[in-house]
Picture 1 (cartoon, rainbow, N blue to C red):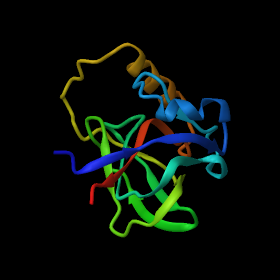
Picture 2: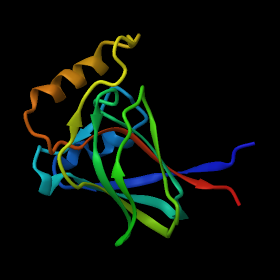
Picture 3: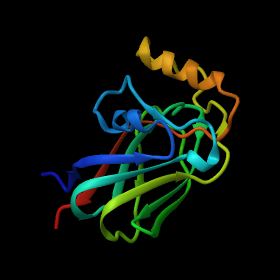
Picture 4: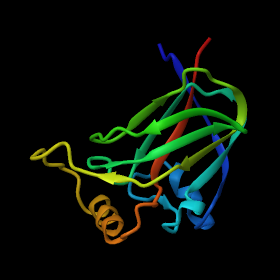
Length: 158
């Protein structure tokens, strides 16, 4: 039995590259939304299909193996999560300790990303476009890139 439901995203407003904002929730792991490398534009606000008490944010960020993103997440104007994302082999979950009922969630980069591969010799089977996105991200010298491949908002079933 599912204990969480996905809350649909109906739109997104971004600090930069607005036309690509939909790529962060298009259910395609070979596309992404990214800002323009400036800290002031490293944010994206999602409008949900309904008000929900989001208590888990599942996301895949570019550079998931080696990059940690210092993020703040807001439900409307209320800060609900702050910290550095974990490096992973794919998706991460941001657990929200005190969910707030809202239909608007903002993800904001609050500082410089850090890079260090923690998985060493583990080889990924997937290649192609996913690796192309990573190569493109590495070419940028900015540490203020927020790059979201996929995001979804989850609400516990009550």
